[in-house]
Length: 135
Length: 121
Image 1 (cartoon, rainbow over the protein chains, first blue to last red):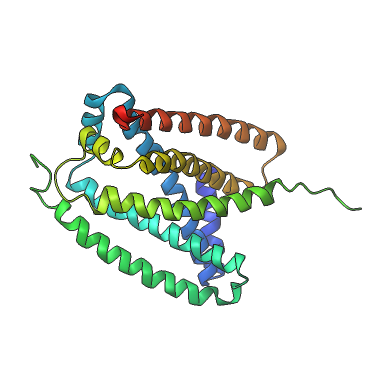
Image 2 (spheres, rainbow over the protein chains, first blue to last red):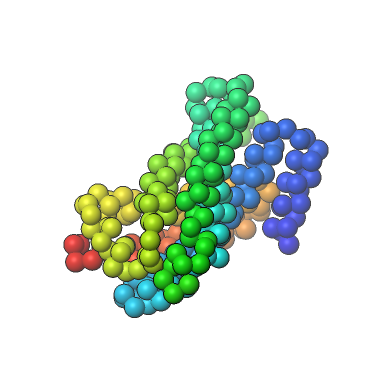
């Protein structure tokens, strides 16, 4: 419940004060929490390597199909939004450029869009049948 | 009356930025190699072992990557919780829990990696 309240409050604050800083703050949090969840799943899948080759191949095989190739696009979107936004706030803070944060935001959005276009182009074949053996 | 203020949150704030900037570099490379440049077939044990044995630096890279990730993740969640002014007892419990989770995840990560490094370690 605390978690849903947190998101509700963040949404309310963003709604009351609709500016770039607040919206990116909300997205930074949401993507951050999402990436922590992903990190746990990633650790679960990869840690099968501790039990050896066969269990690793089995668990890795379960997450390599066209559906997961689509999920990967969402994952990469979360990663690059969080990354570019993190770099933006670091640059603004460390170099005293807070007044230019909106300009940096639009630069961030251009880079983000470019990366996502490349990501979709690269992931597209993986979402078709035939890319993965036996699928 | 002047209150004595702890610098702990300032230090963790700074470390969050620092680990974040490292992760920006790490993740860019990681996603390129393991997602974008992977163009055919399944990624399996043999593929990963072959990739990681390509250079000694992959070992250094991943053994640093895991603790940076774990720290950034847990410290980030802690920063969100701290925004809601948790009570002393709750803070202490969460911090203790996060240290246990953090150490456990780092150890599991290192064990996973040494298995994937193949015979080269």
